[in-house]
Structures are given as C-alpha cells and as structure tokens.
Length: 501
Ligand code: FDA
View 1 (tube, rainbow, N blue to C red):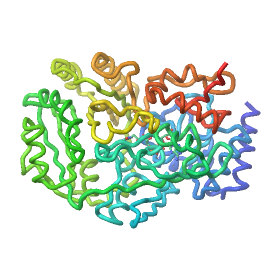
View 2: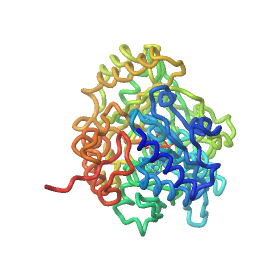
View 3: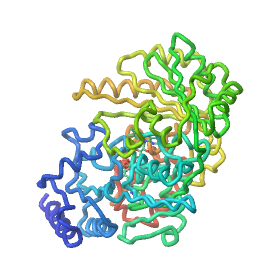
View 4: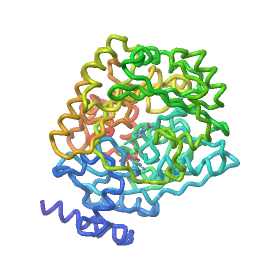
C-alpha cells in the first residue's frame, strides 16, 4: 500500500540521518544480494515466494543499531537481527509471511573479541563466529576453551541467546550458562548492560532467543579450563556389525560417563560413527572407555592427541589435518536444510532402533542423525536457572537433512523423510511436551498469530512450551516488561503476557 511505501521512505530517511549511506543496502544497491547471501545457511529461505528484507543495515557501531531500532519503531518497520545467519528456519533474514515488511540488522561487522587472560574472560561481539572465538581464546592461552556448538560458522549472537550446546557442555554446561554480562539495545533504543537491564532481561537473553527482547551487541563470557592436550576419536561401526547394539547401550552409558568425556553418535545410511572428546590423554581415555563401554572396543590406536582448538577442527571437519585458521572462514557451502529434533528420557528399545534403521535410515534421502548426550553439568543446573529447561534428559536427537538439488521434488522428499521419522518416533521420545531446543528452530511446531496488535499468548504457548516448558510464562512476562508493544517479533517470537483478567 502507499502508506507502507511512504513508511519505508521515511524509515530510510531516518536511517540516513544517523548511518553512513554505504552501510544502508536496499535492493537497488549493488551490495544488497551479496550481503544478503553472505550468511544465508539455508537456501530454502531465499527461494521465490519468501519475503526478503526491505533493507539490510550493516552496522559497524552500536549507535547504528540504536538508530535502526528507533527509526523502525517510529516508522513501523520491524527488524530482524542477524549475527551468523544459521537459524534453521531463516528467521534472521527471511519471512514466510508475504505481508511482513522488515529490515535486517546485520551484525557481522560487530565481531571484536577482547580476551582478558588474567581473569579468563572475554568480551565477544555478537557478529563473531564460534570459530573466531575458539581461535582467539586458544591464541591467548592453550588452556582456554569455551563450551559452544560444533559448527565454527555459527554466530555468537543467535547461539548464546538460544543456549549453545557442544562438546564441552557435559563438563561446563551451555554457552548461556557461561555468560557474565551483555550489552543490549532495547526496544526504546537504549544501550543497557547487566546492571542496567535488570535481572529478568538478563535471564531471558541467556536461552530465550534474543530476537524477542532486543538486540544483543556483545557478551562477556567465562573462558573455561581445558588441558594442554586433549584426545579425540571417531570409531565407525556398520549396521551389519554391531551398530544397533552399540547405540542401544550408548543411550544409558553416554549420559553417565565422567564429565571429561563427551561421546556422541552420528548415524547415516549404513554406518554409526562414535565421536569422542576427552579432556585428558589417550591412556586415560582408553581406561575410561574400557571401564564404561568395553563393547565399543576402543583402543590406543583410535586415539588422536591434540590441543583443544584442534579438536574443534576435528569435530567439524572430521579430521584434524586442517589448519586451525579454517576456524576463521565465515563461509559455508550453500545447501538446503531441514532439521527436526527430539529429547530422549528413556532409552529407545533395541527393536525400535532396528525398525528405524530398516524403514528410514537405508533410504537414499535419509538425514544425518546426531545423538548428543546430556548428563554431567547439564543435568546439575536447575531447569529454571536459564530459559533452557531441558536439563534432565539422557540425550538429544537431531534429524539433520542437507541437500544440494534445487526443486520441489527434492524438497518434498527430504521434508517427508524428516517428518516421517519424527512421527514414527513419537512413542519413544519426550512427551507432554515433546521437548525441542530453541536453537534447533522448527516452524512445524507452529507459528505466531496476532491478537489485536500483539502476538497471541494462547497460540504461542503451543510451540513455546515445547521450547521452554514452564519458563515460557516467565519469558512472556519479561517481554511485557521490556517490549510491551511487541516490536521485536517473528514467526516464533515470545509474546507479551496478557494482563491477568
Ligand atoms: P542467526 O543470525 O540466524 O540468528 C538466529 C536467531 O537469533 C534469529 O531469530 C535472530 O534474529 C536472533 N539473533 C541473532 N543475533 C541476535 C542478536 N545479536 N540479538 C538478538 N537476537 C539475535 N546449535 C548448538 O547448540 N550446537 C551446535 O553444535 C550447533 N550446530 C549447528 C550447525 C549448523 C550447520 C547450523 C546451521 C546450526 C547449528 N546450531 C547448533 C544451531 C545454532 O545454535 C542456531 O541456529 C543459532 O541460533 C545460530 O546463531 P546465528 O547467530 O548464526 O543465527
């Protein structure tokens, strides 16, 4: 409509009063496409029919973020914040709603990392990647690590605000459990830190998803201690060998292992690969595996000893023969993606694994299935300490489907595989609610609807309690305090809590 386009013109005028024109990228500027694509991690969300941003603001200073928020509110243009662009459903740069007009605030240039080695702390810009943080921490001191995800191109901004799980989480918890302070631009355009934002907002941004509450510019994190030498292995077993038995046993063994040992499983087609990070030397790992999981048959020759930062390379590339500078590469290959995930409370019986394998895993379109153990520190933190409530499960399960072919045939095939296996697993996974981790965003769970001018709380509970359980209501209460007009919204943002009637 004409009023919408005049809003957009007024918004652009407002931006240009505070932000250099070279940082304001509209579809008419040459840089728009390359900037949009610079951190798109799911090609499904740039297909025709998907709503793209009216403008991308490539902020280089906090004031640019404040200006964008203030102008957006004044001229009714909503904002999506993008740090690393890894959202599984593209919510940081795209919308499935054809009527949703929005600007993208791209934080990739706000990625400074300052390490305070004497305190083992770091300030990290939201636009930094996990790989950049791992690299910087290790460069400051080989015995510094940080608990976060296994993919180095994931952005700090989305990851920390949604939780952040990885190979050090059994020892040190989530990334969000290790956040000490943060700088946020709120819905009024104010710059706040831990002491000025108040404890409720500081709680909400450590696992509630940042997008509902403001724009987090930077984070102060605790660096954690890792030994100078750690040990990894990757052991493959086929279905014809012992993989089904081993996975069945792994379900109870892995969450109960000592905290220094993280043992995940990756399953695809005929093969299960058991991948480990041990915070110690090979001999200690062999002893631990013999004591807890002799059936895997792990031995000295499976060990690879290395520094912790090299282990992050190993976890991503599947080999440590890649220089650690690869952690600084912000680009990923382009692919289409659909992920669904689950939490497991009781071991899935052997016969169910047999039938999952026979009915699903042998198909050519099968996803990569990732099994990540909890236990250790994960299970010793209260489910209400942060918005992330999934502390007491055995493990999480992901169906991670990646494909490269364009076209609806490939898309339909992949989606129906992921949705089909998910449906078949219903009897065996968490119930009431069937729990999902918010960083594994899944729009199949439901999308927001408006009630008056704000997102409906009653509708949002359907998906929201699956991500946050009892913490959902507190997140909505925080939203009412910090953004009662619901400026920061997307398909699955937290709604304000309606006033008690
Ligand atoms: P992106 O920029 O897309 O943002 C995600 C969401 O957070 C969006 O809604 C966005 O608006 C909001 N947001 C981003 N920055 C913000 C900011 N500064 N302030 C406020 N809101 C902000 N997870 C995990 O725990 N462990 C893992 O090992 C992995 N591995 C992994 C691999 C791959 C290939 C992918 C694609 C994803 C993962 N993830 C993961 C999931 C990942 O943690 C999740 O997608 C994060 O939200 C991504 O953060 P980005 O900043 O990259 O995303």
